[in-house]
Length: 107
Image (cartoon, rainbow, N blue to C red; front, side, top):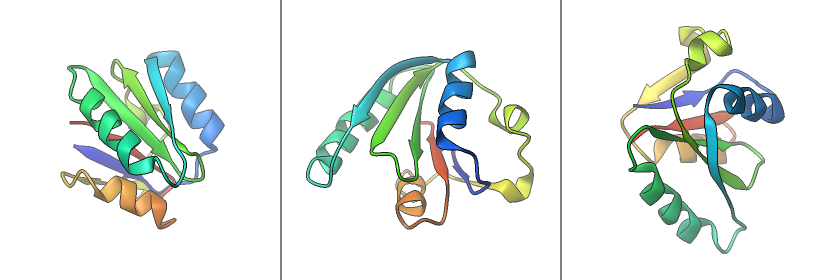
């Protein structure tokens, strides 16, 4: 289940807080030309067991983590702060359109 975070959280704080509870395996840096190819590589890596991804607004990177983190508890999220979706593209689209701060991708 993918989680689309709508509550504003400073990107650096979100990233560093997740790194305390989970291992940052790799970050995938992209630009306008390489984004689609890098995204395919990122999604392929996400298929590994016990991995999840992070994509944030205004940051040209996809982050691959291993482990589990209770995002709701860590960031004190309420039901109105996020939405969940099975659609793998929706977190990316919502962040790219500026309608979400970040997307957590769980395959």
